Length: 182
Image (cartoon, rainbow, N blue to C red; front, side, top):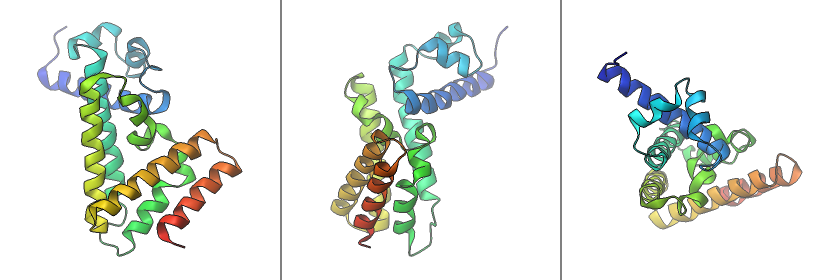
């Protein structure tokens, strides 16, 4: 059965969004094409009608994951003077820590990006720049934005590594306090 171009584009977008979630949860190497397509409700063979290789999907999924994460951060009190504090508290929250599939692509995938080719590295670099642009718009200082991004991503990675117990909560709370100078 032939699929219209519109339906093919919808299917491709659905696969990218499914991959973005699964890659953040399990890593790039933790998700095979078969399990990805099954999660997307499609056949394994359908993958190769949409993508030339898994690496192509990885780069697109990274871009989609960054866009999703940035949209959530941008929606955090866009006109509120306390916007930075809300962004920090949202980013370094237990809810964000405990939901990597819905969370920051950089915290979940940045360490892997160097092992998956130039396409993914370019997508990761664009993602970092996108986050930096957003934080610079809030803070007005590109150097501070870079330091804040590095601290938030690092704190989230460490909190996730420590699990969901007291140490993890402490890492989140101490970094919120440090970033907001509380």
